[in-house]
Structure formats: C-alpha cells, structure tokens
Length: 470
Figure 1 (cartoon, one colour):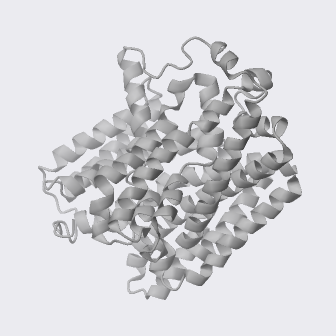
Figure 2 (tube, helix red, strand yellow):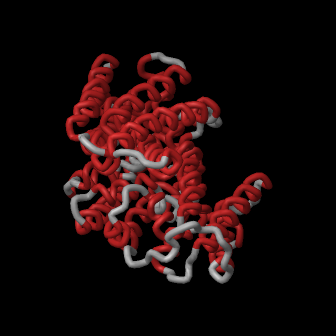
Figure 3 (cartoon, helix red, strand yellow):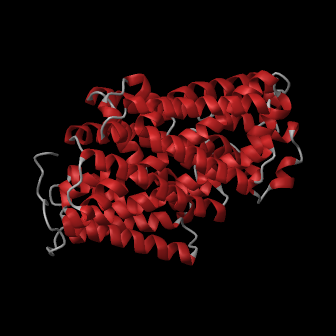
C-alpha cells in the first residue's frame, strides 16, 4: 500500500507542477487569471477546510466531547461559506482587487492596509502549521518517518508546487483531491458499517452525546456562540476565501460556488464524525492509549487501515495526504500573496508584473519556513486551525464587514477595531477565561469600531473615502 500511496503523491505533485504552463503574469499566479468555472470554484471552496481539520481534528473532538464539541467545524465552517455567498461574494468580486489587503487600502488607506496585512499573515501561520503536522502524523504511520521528518517532507513538497503553480496548482489539485477523498470516505463508511451494528452504536453512546444546544448558563451560551463564529465569521475575511471568490470567472459563479460548497461541507463533513462512532467497538483501547497525544488524531486512519479493503486504503490514504498538501498549498499561497502585494511591493516602490510574480514566489518560501517552525512547536491540528481563525475574527472581520456595509466606518474606526480586538483577545487568552477569549476579542472589535467611527485622527495617508468601487 505504501508504494501506491507514494505513486499517488507523486501524481499529485506532477499535476501541481504541470499548471505552471498557465502562469504568465501575477494575476494568473494569485487568482488563476480569474477564469475558474463553477465546478472548480466549488471544489476549491469545499477543500478550504476539508482535509486534516475535518477528517483528523473534528473526528477526534467529536469522539471525545460529542456533537456539541464540533460546532466550530463542520457547522461553523459551513456557515462561513453560506454567509460568503449571501453577503460578501458579490460586493467583493465587483471590486476586482488582487488581494484582501487591497480592500483595506481602498477602503481605509495604506496604513490600515499594512496593519491588516500583518494580521492576515499571522492568521495563516498556524493553519499552515496544522497541515504540516497532519501530514507528519499520517506519513509517520504509513511509511515510518518520525513526526519531525514527516513535517519537513510536507514543507518541502508543498513549497515546491506552490512556488511553481500558484493558484492554478491549488485549484486543480483541490478539484482532484475533493473527489477522491470523499469517495474514499464513503467507501470506507460502507465497509466499516457493514461489520458494525450502527443502531447498537447509537444506543451505546453516552447520555447527551448528541446534544447540540448548550446549557442555559451564561458561560455555556457564550462558548457556544464563540464556537459558531470562530470560523463562521472569522474565516470570511481571509485571503484564502477572497482568492477563491476572485478567481471565479464571473460574479454569479462566485456566489453559486459558495452556496454549493457550503452545502457540500455541511453534509460531507459529517462523514468522518459518523465513522468515529465505531471507535468504542472496533478500537476500544484507542482513546485511552492516545488521549492527550498528537496520535489521537489518527483515529479515522486507524479505522480505515484496520477494517477496510486494500483498495479503499490506497484511495483513502493517498487522497488524504494529497488533500492535506492541497490545503497547505492554499494556506501557504494566501499570506505569501499578502506579503508580496501589500507589504514588500510598497516598500520596493515600482515593481513590474513579472517582478511581483517572483516576489510572491520568494514570499512562499519565507512563509513556509515560519510555519515550519510553528509546526515543530505545536501538534494539535484542531486548535491550530482554531487559533488561525481567532486572529481573523478578532482583528479583520469587523472592519471588513463594516467597510462594505457601513458608510461611517473610517480609518480610525478600523484601526481601533483591530487593536481593541487583538489586545482583548490576547489578554483573555493569557488569563485563560472560562468563556472563550475569542468572544471577548470579537465584542471589543465591535466596540472599537463604533467608538473610532466618531473620532477623526490622521491614521490614513490616502484613499479613505473611495466608496464608488464598493
């Protein structure tokens, strides 16, 4: 099986490298030339999180804490895609911008662009690291590498084909892997539940395991709301979503793609959770042996390896590793785009289109090295992704939404929102509050925006009122 998986990975890398033929200018590299058809847009939006986060992270949280423990993903993630289609895809697409950082410059000025760009980059480092960790865990189980060696291997592969193909490589590999990983999970489900009585599993789950609503106390309700909005709102104002919307060939395709991808994620995201239900019967000692270690996240792979046919195993593990690489590639390209377009380009001054293309490629390498360091330090996939979304929610979402829908939002309001959200969230995190710190940061971001809207300070240096493009 290992040989087949390695061949599978090699084919994925070849596909990613092959897309270099379509990269002629920076817009091709960053936004696939704004030419993606509906089927590719759906696949790449769906694949935004459908990899290690859903299959490895969410299934582990589910088996340990029940249905309410996975509100953030897949439910909050699906909510994000629906909201993008409903409120954000149309106005953002019409702006014809190259990066999300460009939005903050057009709406609030160059200084806010710089600050927002730094926050965007920070929000992605943990997400990329999560994918590297996931690949390391899987590769250590399949081909015998250490966790560190697997992380290093993931970094090398992802950096290679992202460096070469950009958004075209991301989109095409997302499309292929979305099909194969879903097919692998469905076939695995049929085989596993062919040997396990599903009704018996449901009857033997702990009391309250399928509870979806919180207790009626303030702390529980607050944490429940925070779980919904961490990815549900926090991932709306992200470069990876922005790139997928702006890469569509039309506004209509962007909107429809978000809706369809949201529905797919809401339904197909439940498959790993259903598979995890068989753990008490098929792997009765797994939870006790691995709780608190990174290998607890190997729950689904262990089920597939132990109770499915070789063909399903090859399909599942090959697709899973490739899906992780594809997700990592998406997450890697996003901050690299911001770093080159919104930070390095203004510093260098005049940059040709070809120069921007290569500047972005070098930024890919820089971001990959930083994420590698974080991956070697932390190993919890689910919480790494949650950390990434938390930065986006507490600093970026409120000024982004206000910039589209509230005319009174100005540069001071945006700056106050970002600073207040970031400081309050970081402080609450250090204090380890009972209520999720992200909720405090989100509320502080709203309050900061409202107060800042009525204060005029010389924060912006340019286009603060360029609303005609909005």
